Length: 414
Image (cartoon, rainbow, N blue to C red; front, side):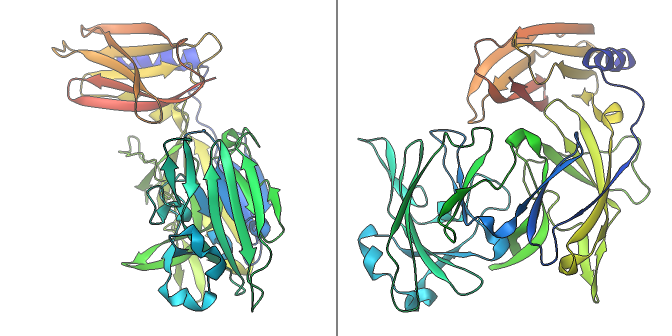
């Protein structure tokens, strides 16, 4: 039955049982890591942005979701200087030792340094009358060259209105007030702004056009000590599993996928003596929402002298595309992304009688269940069509439950 399921699934989604050849990628962040690199495995495409082109990033994917990240790559530090907007004119850089330093999350894109301030929503409070989030926290950004800028995000309502000013060594410059609506760059996850150049910039490709971001980011080196590493963060639209494979890919690797954006991170290389050494025994499996899976490992890294690095990858969907839920059931989903008719098919193979219900549930990205249906629990091979026309376009999580076993897959409705 399992062989039959695998064969039909492959035929339906147009996959091939021929394993792809490894692809070698040589790329570079530039000497001193001057660039941030975005890479898409399925298209073998690369986009580069100057690392110093932006200071703050604003999540723009929803009128109800907000996040503010700082550009840690270029060494900007964020401090909470005051929890009262009335202190704006009296902020003094001489008080730096009393300020609390804040960092971007290295596991989620949706939690930036500013979101970790002491207000209810990090940088502000919700106004029940206006339904706006209003800024209450004054932050100071300290740059690698010693420049200070004070910053407050004054309002969020379908976009960000913020104010900033630069310390000239004796006084603050004239305030700059900027509004960046979420409607800007609708295919991107974040909008970006450079306070150094007083302008909005684009510093990432469309969300669907990248999997991996080669960058510098802060992570905890030891308790209460943050260190700026060079490494790889991944897109929310993929999940990644790490596996140690000194003898190459095994025939049936046991993989646990994670949505933590630092799953690849920096531990694929180490510093030994006077040079970096890559750990090619560590393999990373990158799974798309349509269950396409790539296996990747690193082969070279030069460090900051040139910023050069190399990795190999290949499509291994043939071996890993079908999910085994329990001892006696496997299932697959197609098409994914879901096409214009908004219908999706669940194919499943039950090898023994199951006394429990087999259930398919679909959840939106805030965890709300938007669909639930039961499917048969008798022996056999089945296909069930599910109509998703009641759901809006976007990313959802499909959960298949068989007794005590569960598997989840991201699905995209176009």
